Amino acid sequence: MKRIISIGVILAVCAYILFFIQTEIVVLWNLNSITIQTETPLQKEKVTVEYRMNFGFYEDGSKNSKKINELLIFDGTTTKTIPNNYGENDFVISYGNEYYVRFSHFKTNWRHQHDYIFYLYKKEDELYVKVTIEGVDDMSFEMKMKLIPIKKPSKR
Image 1 (cartoon, rainbow, N blue to C red):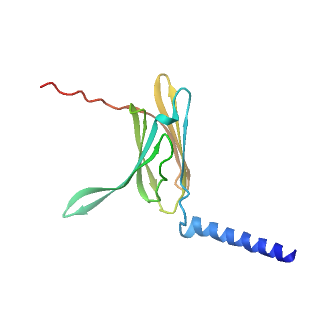
Image 2 (image 1 turned 90 degrees about the horizontal axis):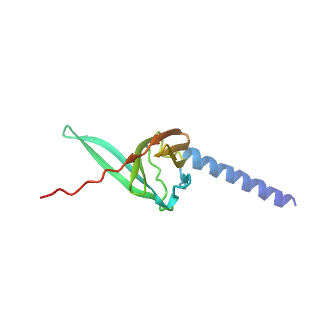
Image 3 (image 1 turned 30 degrees about the horizontal axis):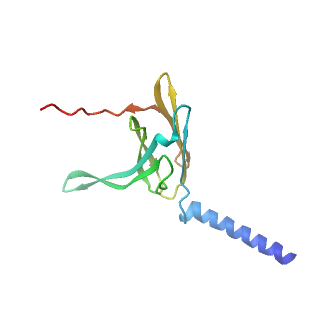
């Protein structure tokens, strides 16, 4: 019996140490999560979330922008996990190829893990999204979604 208790204590200590290492020292796995919620009559299947990390750099006195990690994170279902990148992380949430909203989430450390919760709803015949990001670099806001402009073909 003492042996079983000793093994249990050792396993609990190892699990605690592994959890501490994961959150404070080195990321062993990606714990970022995404949750999409919609208010009736909106449909979760019509929601897409795109992720992009941009950073600027100077070369020969001119500013250039380099895009890395362009990913489709959600397309009706979760397709990929949100990468662990520090700095400006850009998101575009769209609904039914009709509405969109763009925002940036600034992470101060690439090891920080976050829960991203996007809630889409209608208010006064307008489409809104409430963004809640839980974690070290948390943020929360509501924003009216913009109508995606449809370009009409020019007459020749």
